Amino acid sequence: MTLGTFILRAGDARARMAAAWQFACSFLELGQDVHVTVKQYKPTRSLEQNAMFHAICGEIAQQKQWAGRRIDAEGWKRLLVDAWARESDRRQGDVVPSLDGASIVNLAMQTRRMTVADMADLITFAQWWAVDNDVKLRDVAPLRDQRLADEARAAA
Image (cartoon, rainbow, N blue to C red; front, side, top):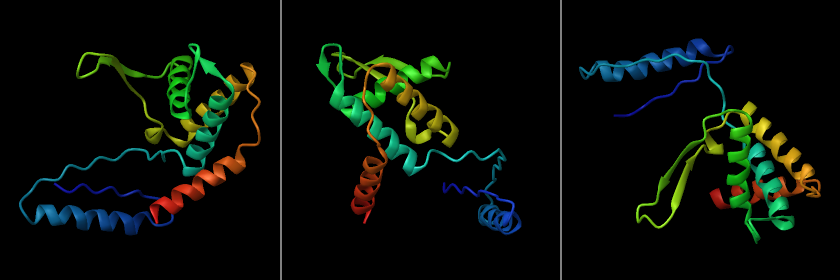
């Protein structure tokens, strides 16, 4: 089954709705039923936000230890998302045993599914945490821009 997502915006809603109708008709002509859902569109975090958050995590990873050891930027990302989710009363996911039973796995929320507003709140939380824990944040904009450039090269 092919899924179609059509985002309607004020400037071109009529044309996009016509395209959605044509897409639905392709199923109806085959005798298949179609389920239509209308909900408010909230865009997910931007690439710039993602790069900014990763730059902050990298800065923290260079300067802080946790539980007596160094943790990489990805680990700090998980720690910060978990703390932010708890602090802001958001659903955090589940902790489950690993498939081999040797450890636990956190099936926590993922930043790629966050809205722009949630990601902005998470970035603010990460900056606050860093400052409150004596992390000297440099201007992370160049780090953000480098990450964006690296991702663009990798995609090409």
